[in-house]
Length: 179
Image 1 (cartoon, rainbow, N blue to C red):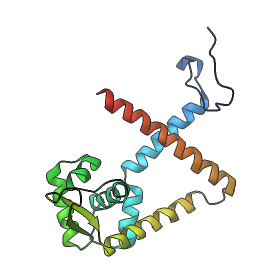
Image 2: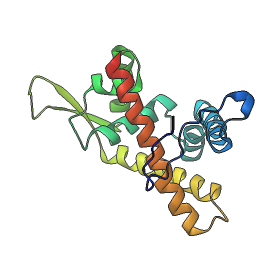
Image 3: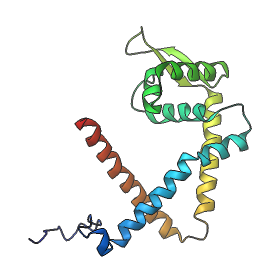
Image 4: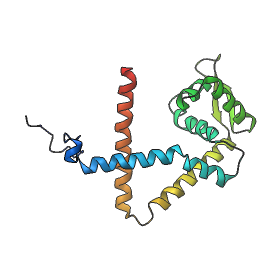
């Protein structure tokens, strides 16, 4: 049986070769790079570097909570429950993290405009400043990691990495809907 493929689709196809046949070396390389990236993420390299450089009393979970607010707030009101869900932690732990960030002046609670009985969480000016510092450190690390790359490669990588990540996110959505 022959496989029909759209000639304009340049995405690599899943290899039907067995491991003994070597499979697709490009896909194997992507898998190996993913493993290395997962290990870097697991070691929380960027977050630890940011905490060290900005010298605040923050913890990695605080950075995670601030990051959730940054990602979720443009699309919906952010509640403690939404933060806990996104961080995949218990709601009581999410509540403690938020309470600590409120005490530090990085977050504030407000009444929901959609439902006045609900409490939402948003960043204060100080919280936005910390987020900007963290993002600047991340930019510096990316600049250092891509030093010496031609600008065209950086643009291609950004596009391809985003497309790859979107493909994985779509697979995650399908997986979670099937559960």
